[in-house]
Amino acid sequence: MAALKLAIGNKNYSSWSMRPWLALRASNIAFDEVFIPLYTGPADKDRILALTRSGKVPVLIDGDITVWDSLAIIEYVAERFPQTRLWPEDRASRAHARSICAEMHSGFLPLRNECGMNLHRPVRPVALSADARANIARIEQIWLECRERYGAVGPFLFGAFGAADAMYAPVVHRFRTYAIEVAPEAKAYMETMMALPAFREWTEAGRAESLVIEKFENL
Ligand SMILES: N[C@@H](CCC(=O)N[C@@H](CS)C(=O)NCC(=O)O)C(=O)O
Image (cartoon, rainbow, N blue to C red):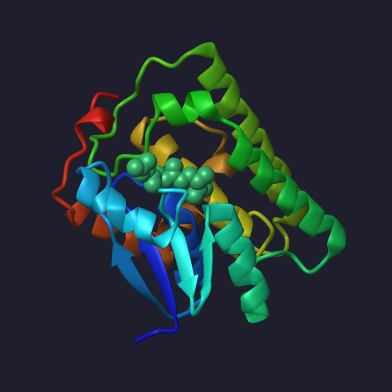
């Protein structure tokens, strides 16, 4: 049994769960996964509430420490396992990485609402609002700026895989599933992410799930 426990929702739909799961797995940190199916009724909700009164997954349990919220979990993992180097070493790059993670965490609602993560969904475009299109343009700009600044160091946003890649991973799926066209450099970044073994592992497991959440199927 691993020291850490990460409670997550359905891999097919739970974009929030994907982020810390990927940060841990891509960093080779051992953890036990606790799967709690989402939106099935009070019994599963009670299982989440027994872990965190926020009533939301993901939740990380490390002994008597409980951490909830995807970004807080990634911050905790980075601090607890410094060898993961989830944040860039250089202060200016780290400030940049934290800014784009915070921007992702607190924004992009139109894109989230109109292009829900759904790994089962056949790839096809959807009519998008002007706000969602503006979100897409901003994310593309964020990625391109990172590629321009750190491309010489490696293929991820800040060179090596890190917190920012984990935070933006669900967007890679959204762009892919909703056939959103992006610039070649942004596409190359998406391909780097899609080839990452941990990303593939999550994706394959999500596609193998048979649970369907109706309210996420109409997009
Ligand atoms: N800001 C939170 C959001 C977590 C969240 O909304 N989780 C959803 C699943 S993706 C959830 O647990 N929903 C269950 C419910 O509301 O009953 C995070 O980053 O972890």
